[in-house]
Each structure stands twice: as structure tokens, then as C-alpha cells.
Image (cartoon, rainbow, N blue to C red):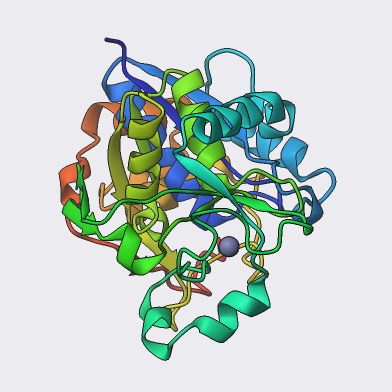
Length: 309
Ligand SMILES: [Zn+2]
């Protein structure tokens, strides 16, 4: 089976260093395996989309020397596929309609359930036998059975979550009609034939939910490798919303070099001036992901002497 990796940014701003690290890591896994690397724009949540940022991300990746296979998949064009999967899960009684509002769920939360790193409120199962307020718009939730779901991550090792205890029956289609990220990512990874999902460790915790969905939809579960997340000096994840600086496309070699350094690949300093093609060739040949084993986050220094950040 051909290795197929992917990079799937959300168009909520220009490419920043945290996303670049995920792109470089997933790209090197794919290229070293002699496989393919695909691009997907996760533009499902249109209210959060920043106009022009999808094009800007694609241009930046191109300038940095990434080569992808085939056309770029946009989640905004995939709603029929997500809806077909939602209907299939409903028809198979693996999912149900829920009329509960966020404030109703919030009122029912006890403090201990907010310990988990998730923005989803734990669902107490109120509409499992039918929506409590059928006159309202409903969300669709997946029936989650009790017990732990395990993921064997190539970098993070065995990782388990009891999804029923932590989030319960999770949402696959929101009340406003938008399909949830968890569903879309599973459907698209299967559609694109992705064999390995390589991304930031901030998504490790939601991976068992995706594994549950893969199994319910009889899809092959891909391999997973979760890379360390880039944080600032205060341990806060670099993200577009936190105003992380965009990649400097006038210094492509320096930016890729810096991502390799973050990924513990120890690129020789002289390669910073060797040109992109030489740097990529070196990186693909010498990629050693095991150096990242068990590492879930790392800091980059801000304000370095070379002014790259
Ligand atoms: Zn409900």
C-alpha cells in the first residue's frame, strides 16, 4: 500500500510557524516513505474563515518548496459526503437527534468534567430516546458506548481516552447545520486514502473520537503520529488567533531550516545558505522522527539574533 500523508490547514490566517512544523513533519514522513502528500483546506467553519488566507497558505507552501499530489480538497465542497455519512449513522441507529442547548448542558456540568482539554461539554445522554424538545432545531450526536478507546501513536505511544466518560455522545452535526470537525476529518481522510495522519499533539486528545467514527463507518483507521506543538516562552500554543507571526516567504530556506531544528533534526548550519532543494534533499534523507518520541510540546525562542522570528 502506498503511503499517503496529508496537511490540512484551516484558512483562518496566513501560515504560521506552528502550522509549518506540522506541514514539514507530515511531508518528511511521506517523502521518506516514497509516498504521496496531499493538501486539504479545512474551510468547513465559514464564519471563522479569513478571506484570502487559503490562497496565501497555498502560495506559502509552494514558495517553501512543498510538492503535493493531485488537486487540493476543500471541505466546503464536501458537505454532501458529510451529510450522507450523518444519515447513514442515523439510519443505523448509531446516531440520534438532540435538542439540548449549550446553556442547558452547561447548567448540568459538574466542575470535574471541565478538567479535560476539550471545548465540548460532556453530554449526559438526555435525548438518547428522542429529542426532549422536538420543536427545536436539533444537533446530531453519535451514540458512544462505554469503555476506553486506544490509539497507538507512532510518536506518543499508546494513548487511551474513555470518550463516554469525558465527552459522552459527541456532536457530528451542529444545531446550525454545520458538520463537526470530527466527522469531516474522518470522511476526508478515508476519501483521500490517507494512510498516516501526522499533525500537532494538540489534536491527540480528540483522536480516539475519530477512531470511534472510523470504526462505526467501517473505514480503515490510519496510522497516527502527533508532533510536538510549538509554544511561546509562556507555554502557550502558537496559533493564528494568538497573532503568531506569518512565515517570511522571502526567507524560505531559513524558515524550513528553523522547522527542522524545532523537529530535532539538527540540520547543518551551512544548509541555511545552500538553497531549498538541497535542504529538502538532506531533510528527507535524514528524517528521524524517533527523536520526537513522547514530546508533546516545545518552545521556540522569540527575538533571535538573526531576526527570523
Ligand atoms: Zn439532548
